[in-house]
Length: 533
Image (cartoon, rainbow, N blue to C red; front, side, top):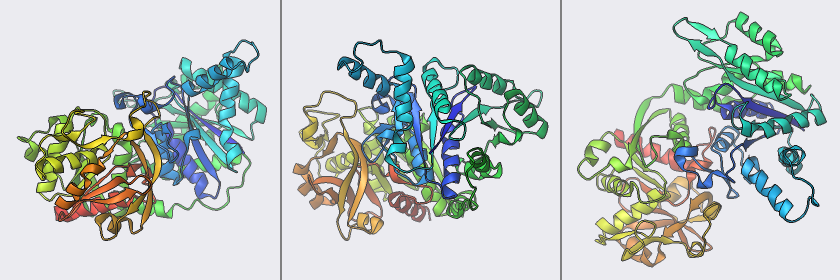
């Protein structure tokens, strides 16, 4: 078992997750069994209760863990399933230690960062290796080198390097090369300082990946190598590219995977097979047409809040050789008076997930527009629920129909709290989370899309379609085409007589892959193209 630790320096948001996923993809394409994990330095137990403006999207694993959005990149790039053990926070580590201390497991000893915190971090570093026979585990350390909260992770990684040796532990440091427009110079000083900060913590990086807006001249690479004690061939440039899906090819050109394998004294085997990835990228970069999708949500100022949805649209577009132009539309800004102006350019309307009352009326208005104008509609989670509310109000005439999440006193609670949720008081990790079965009804749009009777999709919600109102809704034309068999819960609804109108209670975006786009998104993009034409 080999371990690669990916750290970041100078500034945050350089793309450690993309670099880690790209390197892992190259190693996987060479035949190695690899996986990735993310260690986050914040004290929250998980991101499930964090505001999307604070953290971006919460990515849900098949086993129901609420995790960092970088796990979405891991799954999309490698085509794997991650679990709750692939994302660890400082909050989880401290929670474990405090519970042990309360039980008396430390026998009255003083509990300290070293050795207790670092030992628990090391245990979690190596946990996945005990579950599956991986060849290489890549571990992304969140935050930036020099942050106080990141120090225990750096120290634990240093200790693991000491214990296992340099042939089993490798450090890859991602850093920024600054380009000064005024002098037209590439500046390496921030990178030098970042590496020195890492060296002060006792870690010598084996590989430097330099994020840069311009290609690095040979003399600049030599200078970086000399001043950081990193071999010249291990100073890797990562020039800014148009799409994250070019990064594996860019790093392959730089021979990053070969540098890693030589460092571990592992055979390079055959060339990495990226043929399907290349086919997708060709379609993405050379589209035959453009479709416009209105993404109606309440967090559209921060695109990372809908990261998996956006990437799933890109996957579907690439495989259809279509450019998907996403129109980011804030649901709070949509009214009956301006909905035509806001949405008239859209070939398809996607109403996004969310929580709470803010922006609800705009989502309902957008759904009515899609329904009455016969524009392809795709509702996810809250988007599906509001499609039910809109139909109940404007087709069945129940003007006060609503979700009890928004209006607990509605006379027509067409969306209501799940019975098992009523007694819960805690917020974190208590929703309906993870993968659940869904039976598809034959002859429906959902059946046409999935082409199978049983599927499994991931959930993150508390409220459901109220079965007491299902007969009236179905009789009027809103069909339940997918249901959870054990509890007879509505999973998919669609509109009879509409060219493409479908809402799902689950989150299909979490299962879209670069090499295997999700069928719901593919069908939606095809419908949007038909609408445009």
